[in-house]
Image (cartoon, rainbow, N blue to C red):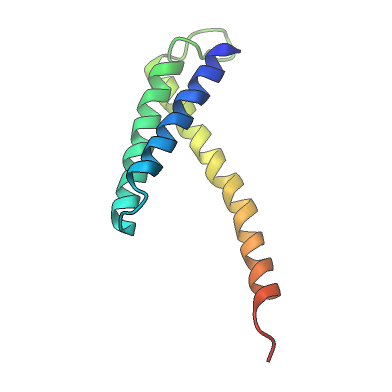
Amino acid sequence: MEVQFLFAVIVLALFIFDHVLAFDQPVTIRIVHAMVLLLVLVIFGSWFFRARGMNRSGNLLGSGGGIRLMALTFAVMVIVAFTIVLPAQVFLSKQLSPSP
């Protein structure tokens, strides 16, 4: 349990550090920061979980399995974000648009 907590704290610290660096930067630099951060998190996550993650048969995932695990994690995060953000955007655009 403490291993996952440690990973979450490290990821949170990386996100805060990235936001501090890109606070007053143009959008293109912020996008580049986000892409680099995503790449770092995938590599760091695959390294972090290579000896901790296991498949159904109890074998360790290794580096390749760790990368697939992190890619799956980010894919799920994107899907959940879109299922929350898109309906909220549609709802808010209908509610906040000026009536003719």
